[in-house]
Length: 383
Image 1 (cartoon, helix red, strand yellow):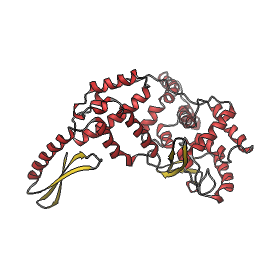
Image 2 (cartoon, helix red, strand yellow; image 1 turned 180 degrees about the vertical axis):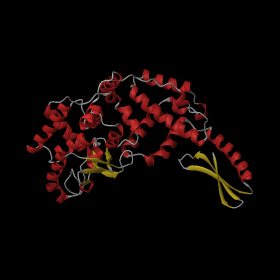
Image 3 (cartoon, helix red, strand yellow; image 1 turned 120 degrees about the vertical axis):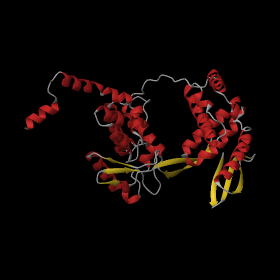
Image 4 (cartoon, helix red, strand yellow; image 1 turned 90 degrees about the vertical axis):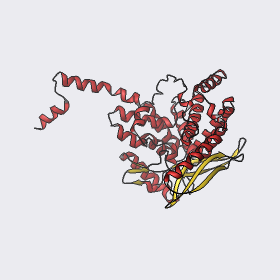
């Protein structure tokens, strides 16, 4: 697809992207056109046709490589690792050799069937499908194809029951176990506070690890960054990972309130930790590795005798599910979780919203039957 830029009155630059050479470098052509906008449009149309001819040679596999090059700079390290892995899986299938312009939904359906026959799980098939769909969407934007054959293809949806949530009793048992481990000197002093913050704020482990003492002000905690783990070395020869302070997953920041008991515990921890470095959960200049929080969780969970299927991330789910079930509004819960859109909260925690349906039915029934509601009764008493 050609672009047009007016360099000065009556002089236009028309540029077209033709793809990439064998070494992955972009191939572009540009022409200078003197005259009016109509003259520039004519040249652009011709160059677009040339671009389309070049793109006709691009295979699905080559498109995936181009897509990764285009998107990689915007991905977190873990996301880039996952996406590159999924691209490699797609490229290992014969679908990668099909010219992009000849790709049809039939080809995609057959690809799904091959993966299923080969024993690939539904989750992996879905992840590979989403990668290919995103790449072809990019090709549509580039004008290389007019429709996304992957989006049109049928991807079966598996019916999956909600994962469920930790019970409040289980959460309390794990937090008590963490405190006992701290007192016994079996885990770092910050472990108990870390797990309590996870349950109270719903913060992700990478966000908790990035917390600084400067983020704590007047009983409120600002969460505006997360630690990305950049791994080095190779299998069998690992190296110390680099911890990079990045924006949060949704690239925004939020401020959440803390209860008095948590503020008090942070105050005690601050007396011991703050003089040694800026991090709430670590001593020294280096923050705690987010994976260390997972280790604290597993130690406390096992010591409490709680089912091993529960992960540290399930404290986040407990926080959201409990808040919604207690009648707190979705917007507030979404803000505490760091969801950019409350629709995400509704989709993930629909089962919790459904649990509040009974009280709504009771309230509406009271209204229809003319019975006194709590609000109206309290209003009359106040009068």
